[in-house]
Length: 331
Image 1 (cartoon, rainbow, N blue to C red):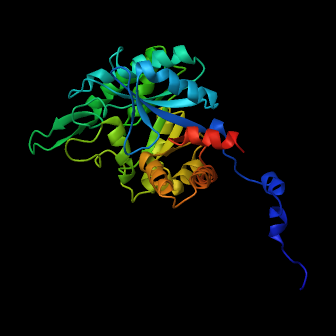
Image 2 (tube, rainbow, N blue to C red):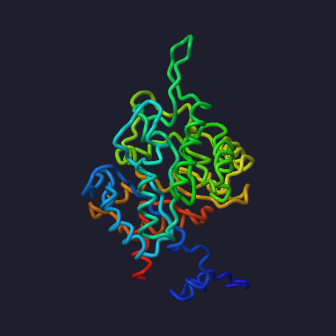
Image 3 (cartoon, one colour):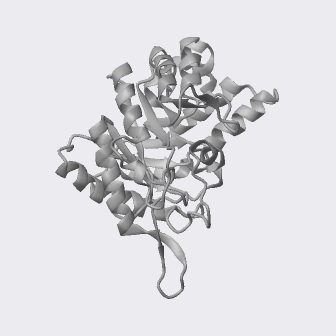
């Protein structure tokens, strides 16, 4: 055999050597655990389409927060499922709303746990849409009114910050939402509270189980007029650039698994932390296949998370966060 001989396998010959040259690592500090809090008492109800994920009432939160804390997870993404819904999502910006009360309680249980508050109206409106419905005066067609919705989203963000949320995460995809929320937070004295923008949120089929969890299925139509077309990638750069200009502190891509090219685009074009949201159907598909014995769940989960990191994600929002923390502890 003539010289030179390239032997790339030299760096794969042992576990220690493979670890030494590994380019991407997943740690417990990379993952955020979403949790769902609901009204009532004594509630810990498993979400049928999301095995291992639960609705918790406020009086049952302690066991979940204690488990998350013990596993070393540093942050949660908080969703609220209210008792009352109306056309303008009043309970989203009620200072005594479910998210606000849960935030107070979590801060009592663990003051150092980062609370990322999902800032949207879809769980709180009786339409299931992410804003205020407006009917066109001529055609009568119903759609979400962008600027009227912004006013309520600002009120929601300020109320969440007042309750103690560490990060505001607006998931509504209204035009100008980052600028409006940034101005509202600053005016209210919360200039230190960062915004985790859902910068690139696709109108995806991967959200189905979440809508069961958040009780946020649209009662008519869909969200394609404000969430992105899955076929588009250049548009993602325009969306992210808008959020950067308006003052975002993080840029999120949602979903993650089918959109790793978009994660890489944001990483290559912007210098803010990039967040990947490993969404509900991505979680449920793995859980379902593992339950059938078709796949090795731990291996698939960790390979997927490593792929997000390789694509450029700095932070991963995932329903697997607690599982990942256990996997890492046992290695």
